[in-house]
Length: 203
Image (cartoon, rainbow, N blue to C red; front, side, top):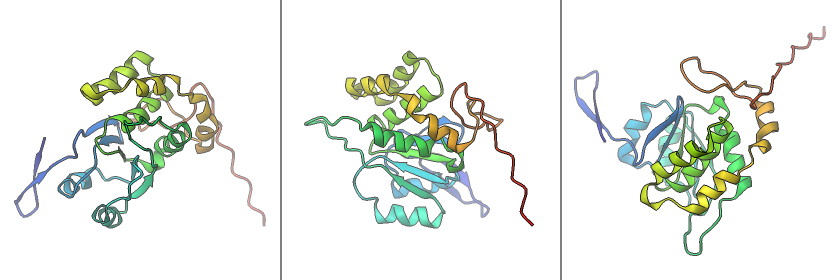
């Protein structure tokens, strides 16, 4: 899929999104690994941050693009080996979720190499935080992974304990009710978070 945008000089610029690109929620995107030909498209998203889920070093040309556009990189080195298969590390996924649910990092892009398995697991855990029913969470993972979906990924998403996010979400001090036009904020489900009153300044 490519988009064509006309510049102020009336020149046509082709905007090519990364492979497997899609919107997860307002301000959250997912994709495969962005390449230089995708940079013009990424600029239109006004990204504040990228979550990178691979252990390999980020390419220098990608780092230069991030620096030029004031985009922060959060790297969580999750192995994607299939022989022998590597399990998703719960603590690492939890760390990535802490970054993902903080709206101060939005708009944000999540990606691994192909945007299927590691990215799919992180999005699946986000959906559990959003209180999606499990069948819908797993269906979304399988849809994006295609024929190469992995049963161990489904098991990981199903057993992931979102209660461990409680302290993280409370510390962010945002109230979560979903995303959309109202730019609603984040907090743990069914928690009434009270913003502390500012203390009077000492004279």
